[in-house]
Image (cartoon, rainbow, N blue to C red; front, side, top):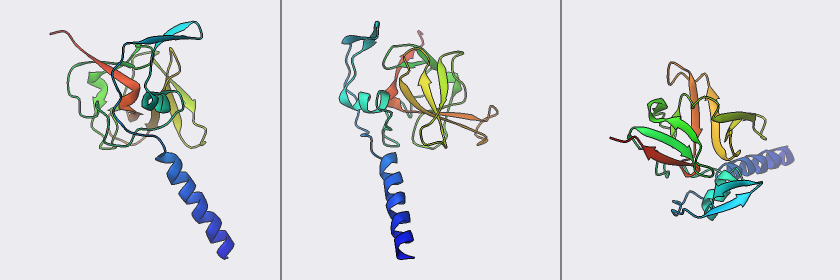
Length: 159
């Protein structure tokens, strides 16, 4: 019995540590670009790469775009593709920016490696954005794109 309980405890600790492994520090701004796979992408900081390339997660409540209320467009930090409009952003109290709709064709859904969730990536450059959840009832569209702030930039509408 003790062996079964020890294995369960180790598995639980492993799952929790995988969820919290990524660093949630604020990214440094940079306009430097690098070429990869014949595409020109924005240079990323280590923290940005941890999430965007290595599919990490920023700590909840730490993202600079979480409480953004301005009108505009959220774009991919890696390639600048337009992903979400501010009109689709809503407050889900989950700790990350939430959107109930993406710009048509901008975001791809992929079964997550954990087998339980659905990952969302930029359709243009495959940058990791976060995960999508269905059926939670937050909005009429019943969809929550839970996106890491560090995966996006924000371009305000011109006034």
